[in-house]
Image (cartoon, rainbow, N blue to C red; front, side, top):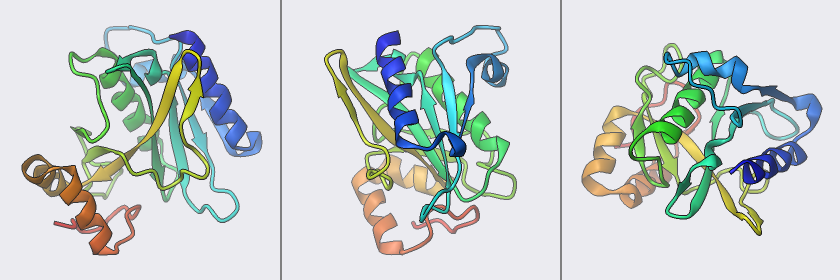
Length: 192
């Protein structure tokens, strides 16, 4: 749905300064995910530098909303304490999976990253979180052609992914709240 994707991109760009934002086009990204040479012309990734009181990077997709999930349109973002090309690659793979798999991602899903989040990190899964820690900067986009919800691809440990599988997302989120740990730390311990 190109119109919705275009609006999602405009929305993202309106929320952050051009000086803080780098846009990666599909031609820059396609090689990272698809050895078959498929192209996703509407797919872009925005890398947003820390600004003001926000001391972390934001990597946000534009184009995942081309595929609806139960009449919902999703885009994804991840937060990172450091700028690292691995975050771009991880988001490309996440969106590629969402756009091409038999089972697209939905809120509260967990998916394996397939490697460590970044070098030296033991985080190796994403939780498609219903919690949005940057809601004041990035929230839902409503329009006549649908609503795009931006969901945090929160990096988690394999142990946390297994806990999610057994006990559900509610108990995992509760464990995060109780742990009072820096959820963006590259080397944090599991909360369960």
